Length: 184
Image (cartoon, rainbow, N blue to C red; front, side, top):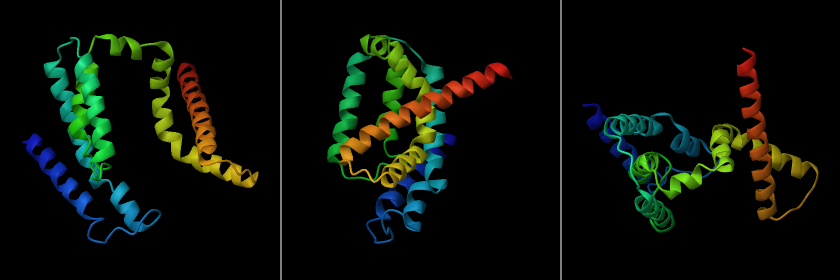
C-alpha cells in the first residue's frame, strides 16, 4: 500500500511541478512562487518516501557483483537526460534514474567502486553533508565579501573561489563535529 501511495504522490508532484511554470503561476527566482515550487515540503515528501522504499528494496535484494557497465550507462543516461529533456527535475523526477544508479553503485564491486574508494574521494564523501548544509550560506558570504572588496572577477573565477571556500568550510565543520563527538 505504501508503494502505491509513494508512486501516486510522486506522479501528482511531477504533474504539478511541470505544469505550475507553464500556466504562468511561476514568477521567477527570488519570489514567493519560486519558494513554493522549490522548497514547499510536500513537493519533497515523494523523494523521502521513494528513498526509503528503495533502501528497503536494496536491503532485501542486495547482491554484490560487478555492475561497472550499468553504472556507466546510468550516468550517461542521467547526463543526456539533464541536457536534452526539458523537464522540471527539482522535485523528485530524477528518482527514476538516481534510484537505479544508487542501487547498482551500492552493490557494485568493480573498478568504479575501487576508484571511488580512493582516500581523497572518500574524504569528499565524508564532507559532502557539510557541503550540502553550507553551500548556500557560503555562496552568499563569498559574493558579499567579493562585492565588499570591490573585486570584479569573471563568473568562472568567482565559481572557483566559491568551490574552494565551500570545500574548506565543509572540511572545517566536519572536523569540528568529529572532535566534539570525541569530547562528549
